[in-house]
Image (cartoon, rainbow, N blue to C red; front, side, top):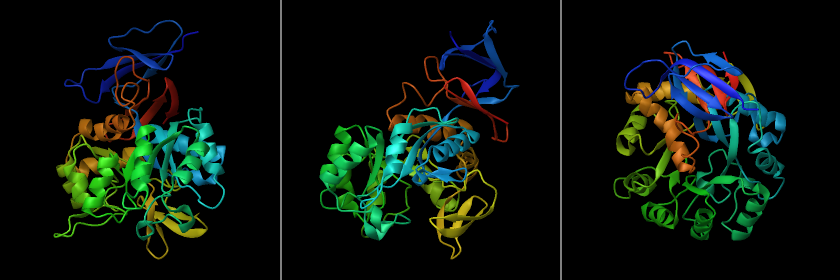
Length: 383
């Protein structure tokens, strides 16, 4: 039996004129947009004039709703999925690490749960930070999650993740990394630059080998000395390289965020959360990796002040992005829906509101708060 949902009286986020339209969804796919009449057996969601936007895709999120991918539990992945949906996210990559000397059941579970109904946003793959990264730029990644660049280790990872590894963050200056980058590209896995001490030339070599993306730009990489341009300049000047930005105003100063926006333009930016377990929880004291931290105003820090992540959802970060860059809603949505879909090769299914596209979308109010989220034609969140 065909499952139908009619979203009535909404305004498309990118429409030149703000007339109200309806969106007819059948069996999880958008079938018609415009003046659509309700039919028998069709569920109806009245948007009451709210804005309809394509579902956000978060390619870098480690945890949310009190859970972390590293927990290695279905309940944890469901908590992340449901929390994501509250912030307009309809698809995400489970972002985590590979334990080079221990248990990796969390990876096997994430692979097994990819594509499974988790109650909210779709888990569409795995983003692995490391293990082929520079110890000097490891950030919060633990030493036992770092190892020499080895094809043998890569094959172990590919075996554990069972075809669900979608993105890997890698340092191209390491011996053996370029061969691994070639292998990733051949396997249609996005090779992303970060957690690296590479200089300008080493970064260019990585890009030539197949790096096409940069993880949390500016963070965990060398800055820009004026006589040694470093990786950032190599990334900026290569138009085929897209880059993740965290728009919380903490990971990057708002002026630096605006500078990156002006250089890269809205075509090359992918907004991410780099979210952790505190996302979706109230401000307060929590424990991460056995150490107490405080979540306040969207930033999570250990007691010594060390920044460990963001607790803001993507819809909240979109608000800050618009504030810091003066871009409009259409461009902001592009950077968190269409652009990540392009990076992942999913534009034929996701990242827009169009006939034939997966029915992943959400409704937002004028203040950009999320009213309802639809994943595959199913309402998974409603305020």
